[in-house]
Length: 630
Figure (cartoon, rainbow, N blue to C red):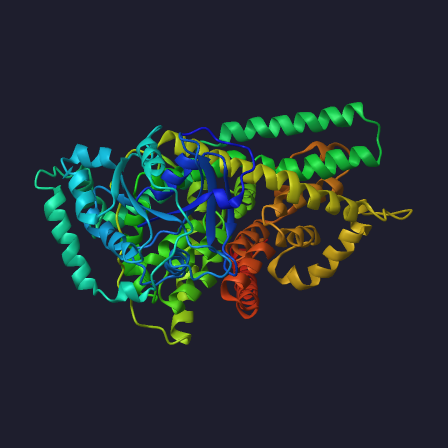
């Protein structure tokens, strides 16, 4: 890639090029290859659809600004993503200039699908290049593409690229340098696209392929053979369930050693501070507030990384779209299509990207219902809460000789979130009158081994996000909670720990009146409040509250034995049920408001999830009391 020029260039000297292509064609990988670290991510004005921009200097010294447009199958937009791509290319977005040139990125193994978009964009009359991506995969399969003939038939320059390999963008850079200096583009009206029917466009695609491509020697790939098993109507769902089950088993078994190392490190640091610092406000802040709170959350980093290792691996190897197809029939039973699976799966990481990913769903009612149920998926913020309670109350033993009981309970909790989301979707779709099913059409990428670099980058990004939350939101809330839990202090002759008389203690005891029927004590009620900002904060809050609730030797104990001694099993199960439906964090509600352009839906979401959480916890607590007699 050309050297990056850090000098400030006048905007008029920067040619603006737009990358456009179908989903899964390697467009974003090519964008990353061109721009390196010189890129920025923001939202398009007025919508929460992500826009990526970057800059680079070509080998000839020309400065380019490049825009990575959302993936689209056609400029006859049927989703908000496609509408953004259409409007940018056609110059319909206020305040944005028409791109000077278009780089159409196509998958060399699937030209029949990709060329429709190329022909539509060509009718707008802008300067264009065609990046024939994934040519290495096409050659391995025996697909022969004559780039020169393809260029003559299309009337544009065609270059071969391999976006996932270093240097795979060099031919594109040379082609950009060979283009005449680009002036600000002018564009034909969108009616030029509608002037040609879809049938005529597809006939032209077939004609071009007959001249420039030959797939008669296509040896296919192992993908088709694997799909015979993976997409089997009986074996497929069984394989999916087994994979998810093994993931949650690994979350507990693999993470045990690194979690113990982090816990020992935090405990050792706390003991060192307690030994070498004189008793006072500062020591209390550092030991009980910072280490007692932040350390209680930090210990769960290995489990989160293991969970994301599997999710990223399944995504990178091409399995996740298959899971959408496998679940299409199940989701169709509640009035949704399998296309909702991707947003819902994204919500296992965080509800925010899941809510935003729902914009790719064509039907407005399906999109709204998906947004409303996405937060019921068990996001990574709940994992620390689950792991803490499970480790404290569920014995670490094997079931059937090889299964972890703790992993089995975690799997049941995740499964409960999925089932509840399907039930809510069923009720919402029936109440909204949207019972008509929409067929699922989705491109299935070829299987390949996950790229280690992609996995490493993805895990590093997830670790940075988690550590950033620990070092900012969680740390801030823990310091605030420590202050509220420490002041005004205990009066003379007090019989309870000082926190009982603090501002936080007063708040907790006030909320206990509401939450006592579901088994929550005042310490749990205190932790629920900062948990509204970020749910994993509840673990740190419990660490701070129980550290400050103890005296003497009990203060040196870890959080798990503390809550195991303080809570009944019924209370622990009730809190697990609460977090299956836990009302959403404020950041998620704000994104729902932006996506729906109304406060009605985030308020409805918060209300129905609070009601579900309370009812589920009440039933769980009462049933557990009946069977345990506690």
